[in-house]
Length: 214
View 1 (tube, rainbow, N blue to C red):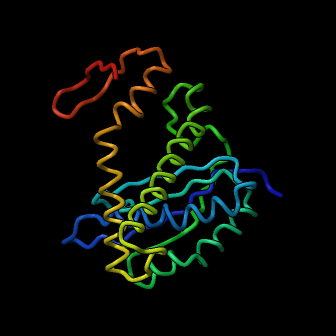
View 2: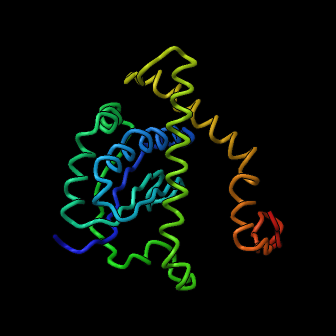
């Protein structure tokens, strides 16, 4: 068994020029691809997180990434699980994925999943923090999905594009609404409390740096 390293599983999502990013697909991948591989290989994964981005550039465009701190052997097994996943195959068949690949670059150091300019104590602890954030996001999606399916008298997700898109857009809207209404109290306030309510230097658009206590 090889040493554990950060392995990146990249999902490039189709983003036609005339369209807004189809961010509902991020929710579908999180809910049905990421959850499946994390649940099935939990004992082999030391740490994990998601990354979402969409920008009109030549780097990646709209991309969802699953970062896993695992051995190379486990990476090969998970890559196979991804390719055999029903949701993954559905998104491919519907031409909603531009590309999927397991990145060639492997990052050996556990601390190197963040930013190199951060203090070392943050670099070493941040992967565990962001996994907790992603696990909360994952569980919120699952809970919201169950509630929405129940409200529509449905037991399973339909693998039919229009219906699936509608459900995940509803999930996205619901969770975005919760973030906007409760994000300050539920997440930022309690995080600020752990650090003794010390004001945070925040960069606000068109304002510059300001100190905020949540």
